[in-house]
Image (cartoon, rainbow, N blue to C red; front, side):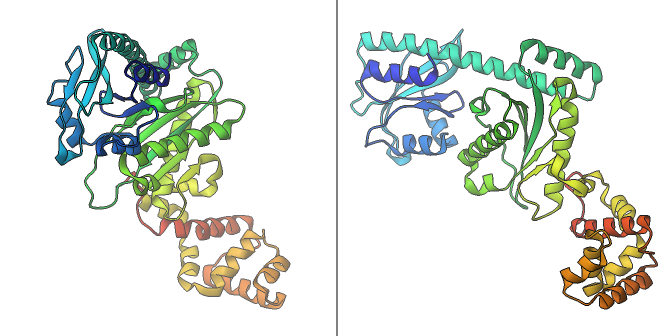
Length: 391
Protein backbone atom coordinates (compact mmCIF):
# COMPACT_ATOMS: atom_id res chain seq x y z
CA UNK A 1 0.00 0.00 0.00
CA UNK A 2 1.09 3.60 -0.53
CA UNK A 3 1.16 6.12 2.31
CA UNK A 4 -2.30 7.56 1.61
CA UNK A 5 -3.73 4.04 1.76
CA UNK A 6 -1.88 3.37 5.02
CA UNK A 7 -3.36 6.52 6.59
CA UNK A 8 -6.75 5.26 5.46
CA UNK A 9 -6.03 1.87 7.04
CA UNK A 10 -5.19 3.49 10.40
CA UNK A 11 -8.41 5.51 10.21
CA UNK A 12 -10.39 2.33 9.49
CA UNK A 13 -8.86 0.60 12.53
CA UNK A 14 -9.92 3.35 14.95
CA UNK A 15 -12.91 4.79 13.10
CA UNK A 16 -11.45 8.32 13.20
CA UNK A 17 -9.33 10.45 10.83
CA UNK A 18 -5.53 10.24 11.06
CA UNK A 19 -2.46 12.23 10.05
CA UNK A 20 0.99 10.92 9.11
CA UNK A 21 4.05 13.14 9.69
CA UNK A 22 7.69 12.30 9.15
CA UNK A 23 10.18 12.46 12.03
CA UNK A 24 10.82 16.15 11.32
CA UNK A 25 7.09 16.83 11.72
CA UNK A 26 6.56 17.45 8.01
CA UNK A 27 3.07 16.46 6.87
CA UNK A 28 3.22 13.32 4.73
CA UNK A 29 -0.43 12.30 4.31
CA UNK A 30 -3.84 12.77 5.88
CA UNK A 31 -7.44 11.89 5.19
CA UNK A 32 -10.72 13.75 5.65
CA UNK A 33 -10.72 15.59 8.95
CA UNK A 34 -13.65 16.18 11.32
CA UNK A 35 -15.19 19.63 11.67
CA UNK A 36 -13.65 20.07 15.10
CA UNK A 37 -9.86 19.93 14.97
CA UNK A 38 -7.38 21.78 17.11
CA UNK A 39 -5.13 24.63 16.00
CA UNK A 40 -2.09 22.36 15.71
CA UNK A 41 -3.74 19.97 13.27
CA UNK A 42 -5.21 22.82 11.23
CA UNK A 43 -1.78 24.50 11.06
CA UNK A 44 -0.05 21.26 10.14
CA UNK A 45 -2.42 20.69 7.23
CA UNK A 46 -2.27 24.29 6.01
CA UNK A 47 1.51 24.75 6.37
CA UNK A 48 2.31 21.04 5.88
CA UNK A 49 4.57 21.27 8.90
CA UNK A 50 4.30 21.73 12.66
CA UNK A 51 6.10 24.60 14.37
CA UNK A 52 9.30 24.10 16.35
CA UNK A 53 7.41 24.93 19.56
CA UNK A 54 4.80 22.25 18.90
CA UNK A 55 7.46 19.73 17.94
CA UNK A 56 9.38 20.38 21.17
CA UNK A 57 6.21 20.00 23.22
CA UNK A 58 5.36 16.59 21.77
CA UNK A 59 8.93 15.28 21.89
CA UNK A 60 9.09 15.77 25.65
CA UNK A 61 6.87 12.70 25.96
CA UNK A 62 9.53 10.46 24.44
CA UNK A 63 7.81 9.79 21.12
CA UNK A 64 11.12 9.78 19.18
CA UNK A 65 12.33 6.67 21.00
CA UNK A 66 9.00 5.03 21.83
CA UNK A 67 8.38 1.56 20.45
CA UNK A 68 4.64 1.61 21.13
CA UNK A 69 1.67 4.01 21.36
CA UNK A 70 2.09 7.23 23.34
CA UNK A 71 -0.82 9.29 24.69
CA UNK A 72 -0.17 13.01 24.90
CA UNK A 73 -2.32 15.37 26.99
CA UNK A 74 -4.01 18.63 26.05
CA UNK A 75 -2.12 21.92 26.18
CA UNK A 76 -4.61 24.83 25.85
CA UNK A 77 -1.87 27.46 25.58
CA UNK A 78 -0.69 25.85 22.31
CA UNK A 79 -4.14 24.88 21.08
CA UNK A 80 -3.40 21.17 21.49
CA UNK A 81 -6.06 18.50 22.13
CA UNK A 82 -5.23 15.06 23.60
CA UNK A 83 -3.76 12.70 21.03
CA UNK A 84 -2.79 9.12 20.41
CA UNK A 85 0.65 8.93 18.77
CA UNK A 86 1.73 5.76 16.96
CA UNK A 87 5.48 5.87 16.18
CA UNK A 88 6.30 4.70 12.65
CA UNK A 89 9.50 2.67 12.91
CA UNK A 90 11.63 0.32 10.84
CA UNK A 91 14.65 -1.65 12.03
CA UNK A 92 14.73 0.27 15.30
CA UNK A 93 14.65 3.72 13.66
CA UNK A 94 11.74 6.15 13.96
CA UNK A 95 10.75 7.56 10.57
CA UNK A 96 7.50 9.30 11.48
CA UNK A 97 4.30 9.33 13.49
CA UNK A 98 0.62 8.56 13.04
CA UNK A 99 -1.51 11.05 14.97
CA UNK A 100 -5.15 10.62 16.01
CA UNK A 101 -7.14 13.13 18.04
CA UNK A 102 -8.27 11.51 21.29
CA UNK A 103 -10.45 13.98 23.27
CA UNK A 104 -11.55 11.31 25.76
CA UNK A 105 -8.01 9.94 26.19
CA UNK A 106 -9.23 6.39 25.75
CA UNK A 107 -8.98 5.70 22.04
CA UNK A 108 -8.01 2.19 21.02
CA UNK A 109 -8.65 -1.30 22.37
CA UNK A 110 -5.82 -3.80 22.66
CA UNK A 111 -6.97 -5.41 19.43
CA UNK A 112 -7.08 -2.08 17.61
CA UNK A 113 -3.63 -1.10 18.85
CA UNK A 114 -2.20 -4.41 17.68
CA UNK A 115 -3.74 -3.95 14.21
CA UNK A 116 -2.45 -0.36 14.09
CA UNK A 117 1.06 -1.51 15.00
CA UNK A 118 1.15 -3.70 11.88
CA UNK A 119 0.11 -0.75 9.70
CA UNK A 120 2.74 1.46 11.39
CA UNK A 121 5.46 -1.09 10.61
CA UNK A 122 4.43 -1.14 6.95
CA UNK A 123 4.48 2.66 6.85
CA UNK A 124 7.92 2.58 8.49
CA UNK A 125 9.22 0.33 5.73
CA UNK A 126 7.90 2.71 3.04
CA UNK A 127 9.35 5.82 4.70
CA UNK A 128 12.68 4.07 5.32
CA UNK A 129 12.90 3.07 1.67
CA UNK A 130 12.11 6.61 0.57
CA UNK A 131 14.63 8.12 2.97
CA UNK A 132 17.37 5.71 1.93
CA UNK A 133 16.63 6.17 -1.77
CA UNK A 134 16.56 9.95 -1.42
CA UNK A 135 19.86 10.03 0.47
CA UNK A 136 21.53 7.71 -2.03
CA UNK A 137 20.27 9.70 -5.01
CA UNK A 138 21.29 13.02 -3.41
CA UNK A 139 24.79 11.66 -2.77
CA UNK A 140 25.02 10.51 -6.39
CA UNK A 141 23.96 13.97 -7.55
CA UNK A 142 26.58 15.56 -5.28
CA UNK A 143 29.24 13.32 -6.79
CA UNK A 144 27.96 13.85 -10.33
CA UNK A 145 28.43 17.61 -9.96
CA UNK A 146 31.83 17.29 -8.28
CA UNK A 147 34.79 18.98 -10.00
CA UNK A 148 36.76 15.72 -9.88
CA UNK A 149 36.24 14.08 -13.29
CA UNK A 150 36.67 10.53 -11.98
CA UNK A 151 34.19 10.99 -9.11
CA UNK A 152 31.70 12.53 -11.53
CA UNK A 153 32.15 9.74 -14.07
CA UNK A 154 31.56 6.98 -11.49
CA UNK A 155 28.38 8.74 -10.32
CA UNK A 156 27.21 9.08 -13.93
CA UNK A 157 27.80 5.35 -14.51
CA UNK A 158 25.83 4.45 -11.37
CA UNK A 159 22.92 6.75 -12.25
CA UNK A 160 22.86 5.20 -15.69
CA UNK A 161 23.13 1.67 -14.28
CA UNK A 162 20.24 2.24 -11.87
CA UNK A 163 18.10 3.65 -14.64
CA UNK A 164 17.60 6.89 -12.71
CA UNK A 165 18.53 8.99 -15.73
CA UNK A 166 17.30 7.18 -18.85
CA UNK A 167 16.76 10.06 -21.23
CA UNK A 168 17.87 13.60 -21.78
CA UNK A 169 18.42 15.39 -18.45
CA UNK A 170 18.50 18.97 -17.32
CA UNK A 171 19.43 20.75 -14.09
CA UNK A 172 17.34 23.36 -12.30
CA UNK A 173 18.94 25.52 -9.58
CA UNK A 174 16.60 27.33 -7.19
CA UNK A 175 17.92 30.13 -4.99
CA UNK A 176 15.90 31.29 -1.98
CA UNK A 177 16.81 34.96 -2.03
CA UNK A 178 17.18 36.43 1.47
CA UNK A 179 15.96 39.99 2.12
CA UNK A 180 18.74 42.31 3.37
CA UNK A 181 19.06 42.34 7.14
CA UNK A 182 17.09 39.14 7.74
CA UNK A 183 18.90 36.21 9.42
CA UNK A 184 19.20 33.19 7.17
CA UNK A 185 16.94 30.38 8.26
CA UNK A 186 17.70 26.88 7.01
CA UNK A 187 14.44 24.94 6.83
CA UNK A 188 14.32 21.42 5.37
CA UNK A 189 11.95 20.86 2.46
CA UNK A 190 9.85 17.76 1.78
CA UNK A 191 11.97 16.88 -1.23
CA UNK A 192 10.62 13.32 -1.23
CA UNK A 193 7.31 14.78 -2.44
CA UNK A 194 8.83 15.96 -5.73
CA UNK A 195 7.95 13.93 -8.86
CA UNK A 196 9.73 10.59 -9.19
CA UNK A 197 11.74 11.70 -12.21
CA UNK A 198 13.47 14.35 -10.05
CA UNK A 199 16.62 13.91 -7.96
CA UNK A 200 17.03 16.74 -5.46
CA UNK A 201 19.90 18.13 -3.43
CA UNK A 202 19.31 20.91 -0.91
CA UNK A 203 21.82 23.19 0.82
CA UNK A 204 21.81 26.58 2.49
CA UNK A 205 19.90 28.91 0.23
CA UNK A 206 20.01 26.63 -2.83
CA UNK A 207 18.17 23.54 -4.07
CA UNK A 208 19.45 21.64 -7.11
CA UNK A 209 17.11 19.45 -9.15
CA UNK A 210 18.19 16.89 -11.72
CA UNK A 211 15.30 16.05 -14.03
CA UNK A 212 15.04 13.01 -16.25
CA UNK A 213 13.09 14.53 -19.14
CA UNK A 214 10.36 12.74 -21.05
CA UNK A 215 8.78 13.67 -24.35
CA UNK A 216 7.09 16.78 -22.93
CA UNK A 217 10.24 18.36 -21.53
CA UNK A 218 8.86 21.80 -20.77
CA UNK A 219 5.93 20.35 -18.83
CA UNK A 220 8.20 18.29 -16.57
CA UNK A 221 10.41 21.27 -15.82
CA UNK A 222 7.42 23.50 -15.05
CA UNK A 223 5.86 20.86 -12.78
CA UNK A 224 9.07 20.46 -10.76
CA UNK A 225 9.49 24.23 -10.37
CA UNK A 226 5.86 24.67 -9.33
CA UNK A 227 6.13 21.88 -6.76
CA UNK A 228 9.33 23.31 -5.28
CA UNK A 229 7.72 26.74 -5.08
CA UNK A 230 4.79 25.14 -3.19
CA UNK A 231 7.22 23.51 -0.74
CA UNK A 232 8.85 26.87 -0.03
CA UNK A 233 5.44 28.49 0.41
CA UNK A 234 4.47 25.80 2.91
CA UNK A 235 7.62 26.44 4.94
CA UNK A 236 8.09 30.19 4.68
CA UNK A 237 4.88 31.59 3.21
CA UNK A 238 3.85 32.88 -0.20
CA UNK A 239 5.94 36.04 0.05
CA UNK A 240 9.15 34.05 0.55
CA UNK A 241 8.21 31.69 -2.29
CA UNK A 242 7.71 34.68 -4.60
CA UNK A 243 11.37 35.65 -4.05
CA UNK A 244 12.73 32.37 -5.43
CA UNK A 245 15.12 32.70 -8.35
CA UNK A 246 15.11 29.72 -10.72
CA UNK A 247 17.79 28.94 -13.28
CA UNK A 248 17.25 26.21 -15.90
CA UNK A 249 20.18 24.67 -17.76
CA UNK A 250 20.00 23.30 -21.30
CA UNK A 251 18.96 19.64 -21.70
CA UNK A 252 21.89 17.26 -21.99
CA UNK A 253 22.00 13.75 -23.37
CA UNK A 254 22.71 11.43 -20.41
CA UNK A 255 24.14 12.00 -16.92
CA UNK A 256 27.76 12.44 -17.99
CA UNK A 257 26.99 15.89 -19.47
CA UNK A 258 24.89 17.10 -16.54
CA UNK A 259 27.69 19.27 -15.11
CA UNK A 260 27.32 21.53 -18.15
CA UNK A 261 23.61 21.97 -17.49
CA UNK A 262 24.29 22.64 -13.80
CA UNK A 263 26.80 25.38 -14.59
CA UNK A 264 24.32 26.98 -16.98
CA UNK A 265 21.51 26.86 -14.39
CA UNK A 266 23.76 28.31 -11.69
CA UNK A 267 24.83 31.17 -13.94
CA UNK A 268 21.22 31.81 -14.97
CA UNK A 269 20.41 32.38 -11.28
CA UNK A 270 23.30 34.84 -11.10
CA UNK A 271 21.79 36.79 -13.99
CA UNK A 272 18.42 36.98 -12.22
CA UNK A 273 20.05 38.12 -8.98
CA UNK A 274 22.21 40.74 -10.68
CA UNK A 275 19.54 42.23 -12.95
CA UNK A 276 16.40 43.39 -11.11
CA UNK A 277 13.23 43.00 -13.09
CA UNK A 278 14.48 40.00 -15.08
CA UNK A 279 11.77 37.77 -13.61
CA UNK A 280 11.96 34.68 -11.42
CA UNK A 281 12.74 31.94 -13.96
CA UNK A 282 15.62 32.15 -16.43
CA UNK A 283 16.34 29.48 -19.03
CA UNK A 284 19.95 29.55 -20.18
CA UNK A 285 18.93 28.98 -23.78
CA UNK A 286 16.78 32.14 -23.73
CA UNK A 287 19.13 34.57 -21.96
CA UNK A 288 21.02 35.63 -25.05
CA UNK A 289 23.60 38.35 -24.42
CA UNK A 290 22.46 38.63 -20.78
CA UNK A 291 24.57 35.53 -20.12
CA UNK A 292 27.57 37.83 -19.97
CA UNK A 293 26.35 39.21 -16.63
CA UNK A 294 27.35 35.91 -15.01
CA UNK A 295 30.87 36.06 -16.43
CA UNK A 296 32.30 38.64 -13.97
CA UNK A 297 34.20 39.89 -12.05
CA UNK A 298 31.87 42.85 -12.48
CA UNK A 299 34.62 45.47 -12.89
CA UNK A 300 36.37 43.41 -15.56
CA UNK A 301 33.10 42.80 -17.39
CA UNK A 302 32.25 46.51 -17.39
CA UNK A 303 35.72 47.32 -18.68
CA UNK A 304 35.45 44.73 -21.47
CA UNK A 305 31.90 45.44 -22.58
CA UNK A 306 31.44 49.18 -22.12
CA UNK A 307 33.84 50.59 -24.71
CA UNK A 308 34.98 54.16 -23.81
CA UNK A 309 33.56 55.45 -27.10
CA UNK A 310 30.17 53.95 -26.29
CA UNK A 311 30.30 55.42 -22.79
CA UNK A 312 30.54 58.91 -24.30
CA UNK A 313 27.25 58.30 -26.11
CA UNK A 314 25.62 56.82 -23.02
CA UNK A 315 26.68 59.90 -21.04
CA UNK A 316 25.13 62.08 -23.75
CA UNK A 317 21.83 60.26 -23.28
CA UNK A 318 18.49 61.32 -24.76
CA UNK A 319 17.46 60.95 -28.37
CA UNK A 320 20.92 59.98 -29.65
CA UNK A 321 21.05 56.85 -27.45
CA UNK A 322 17.52 55.90 -28.47
CA UNK A 323 18.34 56.47 -32.13
CA UNK A 324 21.49 54.35 -31.94
CA UNK A 325 19.67 51.53 -30.14
CA UNK A 326 16.83 51.39 -32.69
CA UNK A 327 19.22 51.73 -35.64
CA UNK A 328 21.25 48.76 -34.41
CA UNK A 329 18.18 46.73 -33.48
CA UNK A 330 16.90 47.26 -37.03
CA UNK A 331 20.21 45.99 -38.47
CA UNK A 332 21.13 49.43 -39.81
CA UNK A 333 17.94 49.94 -41.81
CA UNK A 334 17.42 53.73 -41.88
CA UNK A 335 13.89 53.50 -43.32
CA UNK A 336 12.76 51.28 -40.44
CA UNK A 337 14.59 53.54 -37.97
CA UNK A 338 12.71 56.61 -39.22
CA UNK A 339 9.38 54.76 -39.09
CA UNK A 340 9.99 53.48 -35.57
CA UNK A 341 10.89 56.93 -34.22
CA UNK A 342 8.33 58.75 -36.41
CA UNK A 343 10.98 61.10 -37.82
CA UNK A 344 12.00 62.16 -41.34
CA UNK A 345 14.78 60.14 -42.96
CA UNK A 346 16.97 63.23 -43.20
CA UNK A 347 16.56 63.69 -39.43
CA UNK A 348 17.59 60.07 -38.96
CA UNK A 349 20.72 60.59 -41.07
CA UNK A 350 21.56 63.76 -39.14
CA UNK A 351 21.32 61.92 -35.79
CA UNK A 352 23.47 59.06 -37.05
CA UNK A 353 26.18 61.54 -38.08
CA UNK A 354 25.96 63.10 -34.60
CA UNK A 355 26.38 59.62 -33.05
CA UNK A 356 29.51 59.05 -35.13
CA UNK A 357 30.87 62.46 -34.12
CA UNK A 358 30.29 61.81 -30.40
CA UNK A 359 31.67 58.27 -30.37
CA UNK A 360 34.23 58.13 -33.14
CA UNK A 361 32.55 54.95 -34.47
CA UNK A 362 32.04 54.43 -38.19
CA UNK A 363 28.50 53.00 -38.35
CA UNK A 364 29.23 51.58 -41.81
CA UNK A 365 31.67 49.12 -40.21
CA UNK A 366 30.17 45.92 -38.84
CA UNK A 367 32.68 45.68 -35.99
CA UNK A 368 31.94 49.21 -34.79
CA UNK A 369 28.21 48.52 -34.87
CA UNK A 370 28.76 45.31 -32.89
CA UNK A 371 30.81 47.05 -30.17
CA UNK A 372 28.24 49.84 -29.82
CA UNK A 373 25.24 47.49 -29.87
CA UNK A 374 26.76 45.28 -27.17
CA UNK A 375 27.54 48.28 -24.97
CA UNK A 376 24.07 49.80 -25.30
CA UNK A 377 22.42 46.44 -24.59
CA UNK A 378 24.56 45.57 -21.59
CA UNK A 379 24.81 49.01 -19.96
CA UNK A 380 21.43 48.79 -18.14
CA UNK A 381 22.28 45.27 -16.94
CA UNK A 382 25.64 46.31 -15.51
CA UNK A 383 24.44 49.44 -13.79
CA UNK A 384 23.30 47.68 -10.59
CA UNK A 385 26.72 46.58 -9.38
CA UNK A 386 28.36 43.21 -8.73
CA UNK A 387 26.60 39.92 -9.30
CA UNK A 388 25.69 37.52 -6.52
CA UNK A 389 28.84 35.50 -6.98
CA UNK A 390 30.98 38.46 -5.89
CA UNK A 391 28.78 39.29 -2.93
